[in-house]
Image (cartoon, rainbow, N blue to C red; front, side):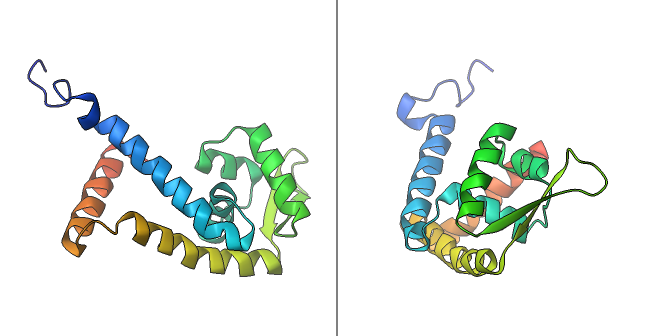
Length: 149
């Protein structure tokens, strides 16, 4: 471990800091691209979780996004006011809140998917197609190793 390249790297080469910086750049680009839809990157992630992952329970959305329950509630309040989602109480368990996309929410989600891809294309613009594929494979390998999804 003494000769680990991770321990001997400079601050500029620290993998954790580099990943964090890329994530912040990705979030900024996502927010910029989604402005035309009037939603934030975080709100888009909620819409994507409902649409793609078929998540309908408020608690599952919070877990997927790694956001605490009160923050999810506040975010969903804003999204409900915008007409993007509806929330209903489960018939079987009053503590469980079900979240569904409205027709308007589905339309915004489908447009947001395209905008999110544009943001990622902009993020990866300095990379060649081969480098982008290598990056994708490395990230998938790290994620698979740690069983996060």
